[in-house]
Image (spheres, rainbow, N blue to C red):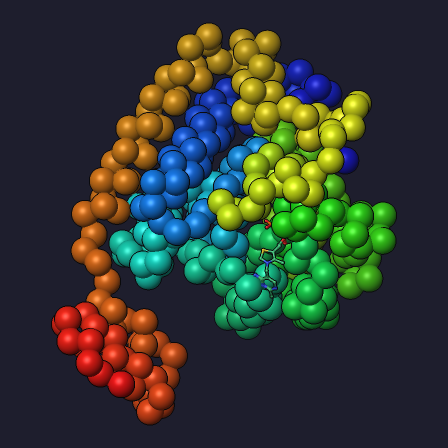
Length: 346
Ligand SMILES: Cc1ncc(C[n+]2csc(CCOP(=O)(O)OP(=O)(O)O)c2C)c(N)n1
């Protein structure tokens, strides 16, 4: 497994001190967003939220390794990755509130977050193959969880990518849970990375709670990807919180074992901060200062999201059919009548 923290002096690391501080500050920003989103959900501002607490190092490290014009295919869990790519936090909040995604007209190359598991993977391969046909330089980065590797879409996407040399990086964030299903019930393979062998390309594991390791590993993987070889990266991390705000992990998580590896026991922010402090890259109050800045940014995002007018209920009937079938036209009529206070309709 590729790692940096605990194995290398900072002087031997391939990022500058400024860049390391930026990575840490962005992990803090993502954490503050996650905490605020949870509290907004608890007070009924949004109906459900899937926290990524503990996965900030993996997502921020990977996002930093991407080129500006690389396409990201996220899931509901990949908010830290989107924040680090500069998707407006207000858009992410509005999506969770049920508003159309991409409320603002930001130009970050990112697909809508996939909720049906693994469906984004063939899309990513399609974008990679299109880049080949058009001689474009961008790569496609497909984010997914360990649970997604049991879906047919995962295997079909990996197969196509291998056969057509699609410039796709499969970024599997193995947080060891797919709701209540453990990693060992997901696959009998020795690792998720090992699955790449069967499709004719390479896979490797990285310590996902080490943002420097993830950054280095994904950056070198993307170099190969751009040369026409897909790569599967398995980023080892741990879902510290519930699957979503509707989940109670105490019902399926047993007593924690002793002697657990760093990626499972250590908070990635604390661990990275401690590493940078011990190499004199950050000063004592750095985390507090980063938290204050993040809080201001998240306050502003909440304010922006709050000011957006409610969507038109008619919108729910848009974008699926060129011509609405009768059944749906009737439903739309009912919705309109209810909205106007006339409840006597069909
Ligand atoms: C096709 C499909 N089947 C089932 C579900 C229900 N479901 C939602 S999340 C989830 C687990 C996904 O686990 P994983 O891929 O490891 O991602 P994580 O939630 O841990 O980020 C399942 C089965 C779904 N959303 N889509």
